[in-house]
Length: 425
Image (cartoon, rainbow, N blue to C red; front, side, top):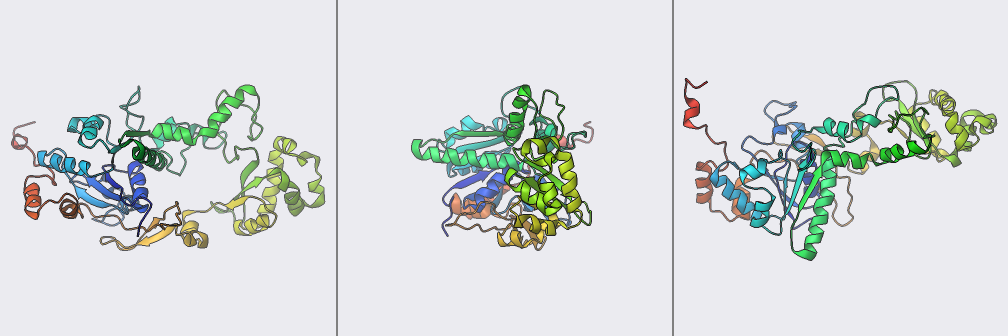
């Protein structure tokens, strides 16, 4: 079946989460994604294993719809294979540390010479230039330095990381947008280009509304926040909505860790909410007559809503509030989502077979295209498609592939002889 990205070939050298998020989406959307791994494989194949000697869920859930080839980029014959692959691909992706590819002889300038039409996409923690360029970054480091952690958590508590992987997966989605933009521009110019996304930059982009609030502080209070004493930076918001309407999470029965529902009190729905939870008296209570006074008395308002919520489960309250058009949503745990009828209907949790671990669950494709519905294919074993790619894509004869293999093009280079010296410290 023809897919949105059919005909696009991606040479994916990325590892861990940010890059693989991007390339997996491209594969699901129809691109031929060749995951080029070192002979030892993507490090996440062995991280957080739940089944001995099987690829971890960390790897399998981020590398579907790809083919795997192992290439030793430190080996001269391996470099030749990589060069041939670059010649026949549209996109090459990398998230190595600064300078790694340059030392291997495959920085952007060299790759561009090999294939002037190629789009080279790079993920770094902090970009290729600047005082932070050489620093290492992980998910929560990016959240810390991009403004997310300083604005997340209880109002009087420590900074908190969000469970959503906005530093890694968020950057991967940004990179997808950059790659597609570069491919569209290539249709007009015939030239490839370098695309870069820094994790810190992408987190900042996702925190855009917090920079809105940072500027508003200079001109007066932020009435949508539960607190009204501010420093000169955007505060932690707890579960305040952070928008023009008041919102918060309220506890429902039986009072478990996820027995909450998030409620947004829009201006035009307050009368209906008030009548439902407190009758006509609450509907005309002067403390809550409009958004301005409700903001000043929002703690009292949430207490009243909380008392009502405590009489119902989150699912019961969702039904009650939706009947009067109140925006709301129960706090859904991973267990809730895996077993949810709506999630299943939208194919957002899929079961995939795997030769090493059997069936496993993966998240489906959140991008829905009417003419090319997504199909999720399980992740590849390490080097599973090496011969297939070399034979079908590059036209290598079996004898040449065997020669490359004997030359160490696909395997870890043996230590130099002097490294075995028993007296060497």
